[in-house]
Image 1 (tube, one colour):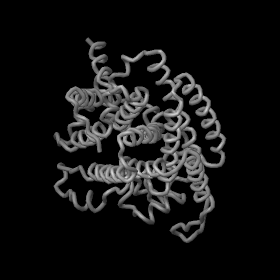
Image 2 (cartoon, one colour):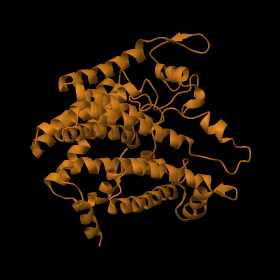
Image 3 (cartoon, rainbow, N blue to C red):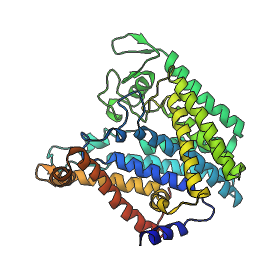
Image 4 (tube, rainbow, N blue to C red):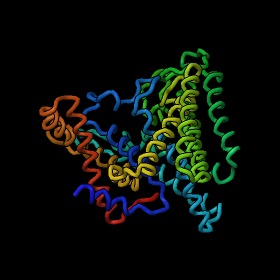
Length: 396
């Protein structure tokens, strides 16, 4: 039954699609939902948590992997539109509309919450007037439109130059631009939590009420902040450059070999840079860009080897379902997770009751929390499969 189910999913994949890319996208978005929905944030296995500040965990690779995939996807989608005779202007216009939609969806998720258990809760004061300006979807939207513009109007060598310039320029800004602490002291070159140029910039332009880490000292900041979006663009451009190569080189074995070599060089360069710019996701440092992009290339090469050369494909079917509706999946998970904590039950909420009264007594703190994540992912899969089966694909 299960093999037939998986084969049905694979048969629906259009012939022009890159199976390895679609599967890697599905794995990435599934991992994102898994780590974002534990039974309790206090009980998470270390691979499912972000590094406290400097450093790298598997969870820290999820977001840059997705942005890397966005970069590759730009080359494929634009090439398909060009083949249909769509003009540069029309492609850019549709890209700008997509960016606006992504930002709007990010703001919708930021606003979609109401505390029914607190009679004094004010949605206007707590959510609307304190809306988080930046976020995951907002950053994807900004990164997408800039990477798309680069692909439309720049040659590969100029995109490479832009990639290097973004990383070196961001490093120079972070290391050599002085800024003032609240006590009047002038500092520069710091990479500390709440005390770096990126945090100062977020605090100045966004304000403490509109960022994720509103209580950080001396400066409130956002892990998807404004200045740190610059190196995130570089991550997307690394995907664009890989997309150029995938379109130019049709030999799968050579593709994989080149990806492995380039990936290893990028990872080595990233760790070499870590003595200058620490590996840090919240600051999206150049060393983090090089390492995460290199690992994304390695994972793509591994998927391509297994799926395209060895033809071992049945395992990939669930990830195709997730990857085909990545934005819908993300929105469904975000809304569902909020609903679970919004429904009051006694002194707790629906999520708390499921974890505390059902999973935690049976499995313990950590395993019960992880089981909640898996249960949430399974239910999400059933919904996404129903959409996939009916041909429902939400493209923004």
